[in-house]
Length: 65
Image 1 (cartoon, rainbow, N blue to C red):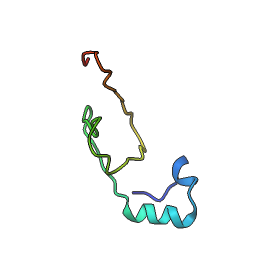
Image 2: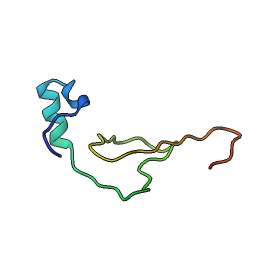
Image 3: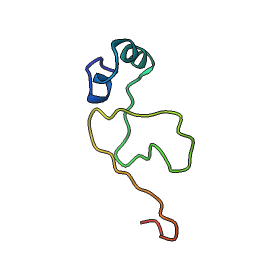
Image 4: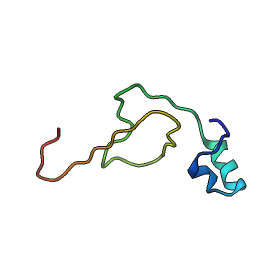
């Protein structure tokens, strides 16, 4: 991952930003790929550097689109 700052990393101290960058890695997803599903273990997070993300949510009693 590039060391250029995003708004979220700019809010971190130099020490914490460095620790995050040591663990970070660049990942690319194909268009339409599902990277997380509601109800599953949230064991990572993404900082979106380019592209777009679509979020959906399950509403009880409503059929999925």
